[in-house]
Image (cartoon, rainbow, N blue to C red; front, side, top):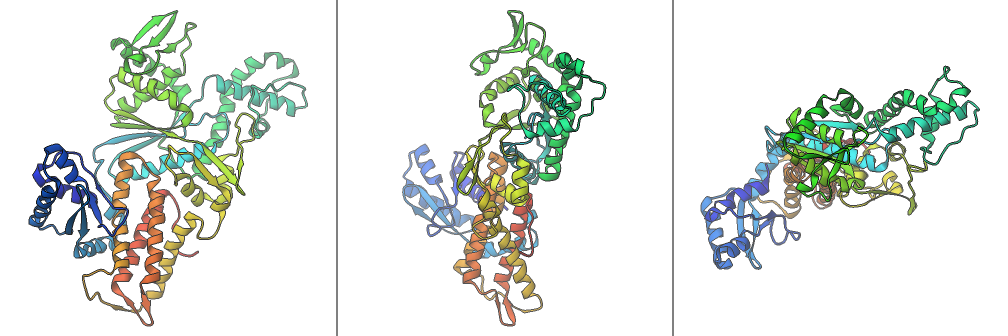
Length: 541
């Protein structure tokens, strides 16, 4: 049950309103439970008097005999505030008490397919904090989309070819020979992290001798697949076992290129669309036709394809093979210049579907108020696994998701580890555990039945907060703003704690039916929120 949508449907019947308008929750609930700017929008569009329009809308709502709205009043220049009907609110409570999951579920995306690609970090080093941030976002979005009725396919694109892979292999080989006591230089262009030494320690190369060192490039090319496979296995271990994220597929760029059928097919289609041309011996894609700042090379003059061509082929598969209506990529902020050319390529292919790119901003790690610096190339950066193990998976997920993806994130290690109510994830989980304790105490007690359909203020405030859960999920499913979920969880936990301070749920040998139902419903919603976030809902703390 999405209250905003229910109110919107009622309002759209007024003067057959087809204009765009908002239904929102006022910041100050003294003004009402919900508000709309429909009067303001209609007055501007039709040149009618806002006051008269408001009077007509209020009369329209009265005539519809809506069970949802108890009253409506004009506030300011063109805004209408609503108060919801207490009896209707109590009916929602009955539904919530049975299943928050069913109450929040929708079929908004029924029949639609979403291809969701995230993390997709190069297999040249351990996962970073930015990778973890994008990973948890992708995992939660997959859960949200499924709850909205979408069919979701999640995928990790493995960049297992190209120059960076060659550098990884050479870095590991040079460390391997150093471990064997052989004097060999280690250029700054090589990866410097401790993980290189660990990978080198897993190699066993009895067939290569000291005299082979002058053939290091040849040896590197022979062994790079083996080395990349070891690095990828480590990444998969962290993703699946530490982060608890499970992809539907891990897609190899190398396999795509070696097969060549897909790439050939994409080139043929681009040629048929007259989107490619030859210049200086190279093959170019005319991306400037669709807003890119310059055309892009697909195949260099030496016949080697650029990284862009396999990327285009991979994205083409998302629509041609997986039949995605929407493909979503979650990428690091350093990919911002890549979005326009990729969108242009897909337009050149005339794919049926759309691509949305979410850019993840950087993460700053803080300890005792001081920033812990990160540098992947020098090997001093903090790995995702290290932070997750230090603060715990629940805290890591909550903290990484707490801010919008397009804002920088300060991750406070000390706060994330705190076992008190200053820690936001602790605060939310404690609300769930506290309710479990109350419900256990209430078992076997006499229940005093509801005497009135009139809600007192703390009851009303908590119930209004509870019925917002479907709205939060719906908003996230439409704009990918997953930060709303932990923020709503904090707001709900705060509202519950305030409610429990003001309302007596258990007194001596009996319990009140309505407060008991409210906290049961709160437990249901908190458990559902935590499940969507991939976080545990403890019954004791």
